[in-house]
Length: 246
Image (cartoon, rainbow, N blue to C red):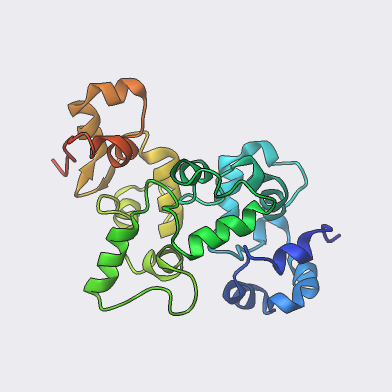
């Protein structure tokens, strides 16, 4: 059975037509057919149709919806966005609201979120540094936004798989290669680091060793703040040292 709001969701701003075409063979103006196709798939095989929504991460980060019978994509659009839930490891609505109070506080928080991300009006999370990403593109003679979206969408669509970094201190592909218990996938590795590895003090790259940072700054360890998150949001401004490989 098609969830009542699913066709409107698949035709809406969160869904990227390139992904819908690639993974369902249909366009956004064929949303009813796309909803039928999507619903026929077993829940565990339903694809991600948005660069801004990661169903695997959403279920892992919000276990209260597991077993609810509601598809994670539908849940985020109907409830999660208004509740400030993270739809993706690099999208933190509360971090966004702290930068621009009220930017997501409207009648359509999903559209407002997509507009803000597509136009690079906000930093999506502490772990993504737009200026650093733009510098990486410039060094390669590339630019974002030519096919719609901005720096952040370019990173998710192309840069992550190409080995570019979301900030100077986090190397997702290097992190995957360094840890045998991390899935062999750049996005899954990124999610693992943000959800678990950073809090454990795992090395984010040759430029940042979380365990060494926590040993250098016991107040951070006592506060139980993930090492790189602390450095990116507080430590760098305080002049603390980013400890690299020992």
